[in-house]
Length: 438
Image (cartoon, rainbow, N blue to C red):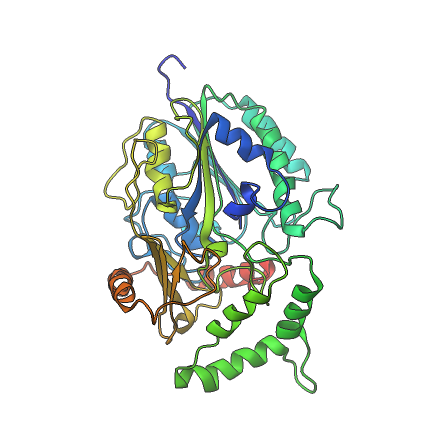
């Protein structure tokens, strides 16, 4: 590179689980095998949430929601005090552009610092002409440049490759298809001049292909209630809101116990698809792989890291100092400090009484309700699928981790979030409806 700063290509595959990205389940994934050979691939990156917008804001700023202000899909306005990756790269003389989709419209403020912020409609996928045009533009771009690419094919609705067959789980086929397209994209990228980073914003629960799972999804959610416009999911929600939650009765423990009946080897929800409702690892554990000039070839690394670490890591890889105070650490600088990984589940409705807060730390996952009685503790070493709540057996661990979570939430309660205009709120509601969130 003759001393020139490298280009940086940063890709997020929305709803990308770490276990399926690395091929621990499903088919082999040559893309991540390549990235492990050429650079460093972290298999235990903890997302800041299980919903897109707060996750993207967290890795784009290196801070958590109490700092950057994007609390949920409905509380989506980025703080004016936050510095984004695009702003940092732009200040260093980079050409910056993004191609995005999903809920991260320019109303969120996440376009800050980008010279171009192109929003794609949901049906503009890697299987359309758009992708070939994007690949050609990348091949001809003059550096140094920073490109952010947000892909949607593995999200709830799933866009499958043309050669997908009935033997594949839809989710695995969607991941395979988008990875094959990314391999084509990387064919026009010179890794001696370009840092490439790939991650997911959060994980996903999906149809596992078994009759049991299909039956539970239909039975718990989709059966029409005679003489009403409701379905079983509405009745469950009404019963919980009106009768159970006021009495401190939580249903999550029961639903989680049903997961033990799963017919598959990989962790998944019993009766749900999607994300946003909890912070189990299959919803918040994502991959992060980085390769390129100056990136050490450490292969697969299983140390716990956090999505807020992406911000300082990418800037460091480009030789740029992180501006201001951030929560993240540079993952390529040497030893990795084990730090609390904050997580949250905020759904799509904006009902804060349903929110969950948690922390993944020292081999434990602790989860508590924002305004609910839920209290869960999982020993991740002996129970990696998070099936057994051991909160009652370890009150000292609960107390220690609760203090960490409470301090984090207290900072949020004192946050003055940026006002969202009525027009922006209406546009976001319409967007979320189009995307299937509402």
